[in-house]
Length: 390
Image (cartoon, rainbow, N blue to C red; front, side, top):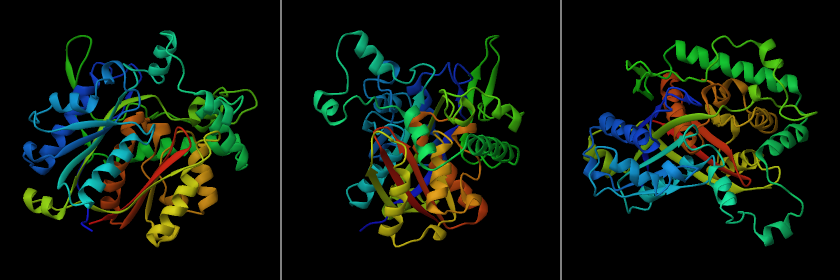
């Protein structure tokens, strides 16, 4: 079977809700990432055989196949096709899987996997809210309701259920949140993100321009006492806004190529795709799936948890990575070494390739070999990707 390689990986710095990226149309923002991948590889854009882009809220400015919109907003010729993918928070990680599978099948040589989400301009849940207001019904069908009677699927409830199941305390979750800010601060100040972040031009209210290169969600003045003082999301719960991922605007992407593609581009690969898998789990607790997904992926790859040098486990809520650590026995020092979504933001459909950009560059910075990425996804799903640094 042909191998699939990562030739380039890039992302925007995250923008807070109504923050620095709020003025960017999501298709234009994603187009900036597509152009950056060309710049990093010197690729002729006409050689790109497909663009597969993750996006969760595919409505409004992110509707009408936002991937194709991004291509038309970039330097790519009209001949480059594109499609949009929704696997909830894992959308662009799944886009990466589809791109790699296209290359590994031998049917394609150069494919881009990407993701975009402007949570400012297209708020989370917009499609459901609008269809409800229009009297067009609910995604929850009669048969689903019969299978899950009196159940309202909720990621917030799922996060609390995970915390309860694994015996996690509020103090543990608050401490984790504080530590992820400290790691993100250290990474930013130490230049750890310089090779993955592309500069986005911002026009301020007074007409002056600047470059957005620092993740806007990082609280550089974060204190443990301050985090502990944030109000609970629900009465008698364990999680707060401070121990949950931040609403975020952003885009990201990776270029996936075959050996023939590498020769055509004349570039050295950053990494090789070692394993790809996805799993379904309980849609009620919902966010627990990364745990069995990781175990199954390692078994299929013939590896153990100790064979992995760095992990990226998306911090949708602090209970997810903390429960994952507790159950898998992974070394905490290898997890989200540059911070995670609690500090850096979680731009939904863009998070998959965003985390991959961080993982690839972190492996190179530390001279490590294997990295594993996984994330919880709405509906009780989880993707796992294992890469080998080259």
